[in-house]
Length: 384
Image 1: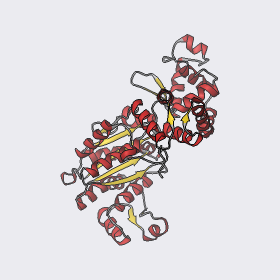
Image 2: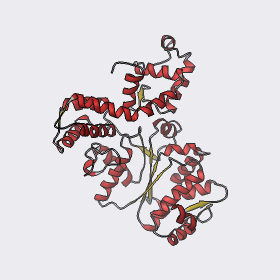
Image 3: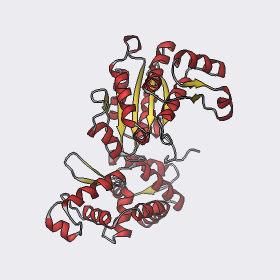
Image 4: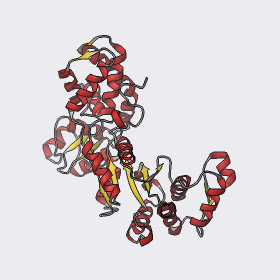
């Protein structure tokens, strides 16, 4: 039997919870030929929303083929081009002869070519020879459009961890080339492909799409608000009832508040509760489950804190104490932050480490709700 509280893979259909409006917006953007950007903290439902959107499109009879790839391990422009081109070609063929023919026709004049031995040994289609240039990147970015035009079925390219493009030798060049592809797309390729950019490093993605304004008016950002607490409570209550267990709804509202509506944490937490109890789930069982969940993630949290300087720890404490503006002389003195110039550097450091993000009004927000609870209770010994 499937886990009642799914947290180890993307969810669709009956397992997908809330965000109906966001799914409709996602589908609407894609069906109207728009590119989409989604960046939220890890485990907040980015990929599940994409899969639910695809599920909705398929059940509505919309014809498309997804091209899925991740830049998690990509550190070079040649690796980016090969990963994207290979992923696109895999959706247009089924055996080496087809891949070889497609590569010859659609990647002619580039440094990318099909290699049968590499495909046989590793399952990867392409090799790269020579110097990576703009023409190679442009060919890779255009390939999904060309395959969509050839097959008559639109490709939707989903690039996960897109922020890692900036870890290549020239991420700005890659973005510039793709911007030109969108801007000067030939008429015969219009509507043949869309791009969906996903990212779990909020500040790194904001640097690309918000600060540098890459793909300005070429890709629409879709935000994912927290799932409504009432929906989460109903979901958890029904899950426990399926195994003959009962839980107080007020306790669950407290759980939603603790995890700030993060359904991944709540599903994991509920799974632990389910394994610990029989019958009525008491508050003591919830506390034990929370302790178990913290023990799983504590090594990660300790590593995060060990990576901070003393100044960065002090600024984090100021944030947890509720301060929002950090340039006053008194606050700098009380938290030993040294100077206002140092405060700016500390804010940048916490953002680059993806611990804190700042909203439109420059209010600091800790991205991980369980880390916030842990660092309050166990690191700073603050009341929670």
